[in-house]
Figure 1 (cartoon, rainbow, N blue to C red):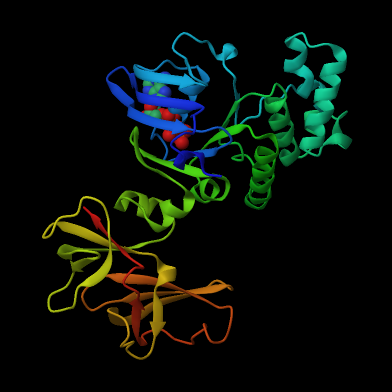
Figure 2 (tube, helix red, strand yellow; figure 1 turned 90 degrees about the horizontal axis):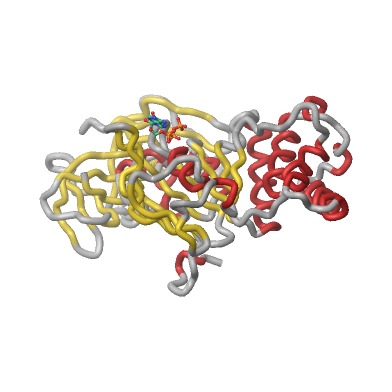
Length: 369
Ligand code: ATP
């Protein structure tokens, strides 16, 4: 199910040329973006890139300085936060400390004047969804951080919003719990079918939970794609470098056709890779190659065009894989990662060993600089 690929699909959220200025500072710079029903969408970028500002405009806490936001076909310009089919869950969860889990979840439903039976039915449904039935009578301080997070989620979903905004929802949890909770979040999103938009600066989190990720930089959208495309086909050095580990080798484009060739060192054959967007022959460019796409061998691999020789500087043993930092005489240090699953994959190299690094013609990208 990939609604963003379907021309006939109707977006839940349309963000059209939206800007936000604070004084003369531009926090959001003419962003256009559609988000579809049932998507789990992540806004990802370094601190200060404007993620929270964009989310606050969706919630109605900030007004755009320019452009149009519409939700479910309606222009939001004059619609206050409490009249939007949107809820926002904050990092602090903002649970009422004196109310039980049950009453926290019931709070918004009661405020809306729902009758007792309907409140009870909905609260029970939410408790079941987040698997907290047995904790219904406890106060927030009597449950764990992960459980508090689930209460906050249940409370945010109780009124069945079309859109739930989650601002760093797992930021307060430690790493292991965070990873477990990511899967719960995905499960709950799928069960409710609510559109989730999550703000995070944690790229692994965005890649794990989201159906699509928007990578932002200084108020601009740089790439909006599925996690796989963001990782495999980053549209820029910025995205390649922001997501995961990557080797970046500078040079200039020497050939351009079905593939691209990058001249990178005097007298050495060019590196071959997939061409990125807006490349021209002769221009400065960067070769981007992920560490796990590089093979390491003692002998020269004659069957591969992309092969370079160097000396091992550093070895890291991480259990499931080993990393090697290999210094090329031409200058760059290349990181490669080799799985330790089997003895065939695992090689026993040591420091100072002369080795060959090689990769296929389609494993790397030549990106404009
Ligand atoms: P973080 O991950 O640190 O929360 P972010 O990507 O969410 O960062 P925003 O909070 O959206 O970033 O802020 C974007 C930029 O806009 C920052 O430079 C911030 O200082 C500025 N900014 C945000 N709100 C205001 C405001 N009310 N007045 C002035 N500047 C603001």
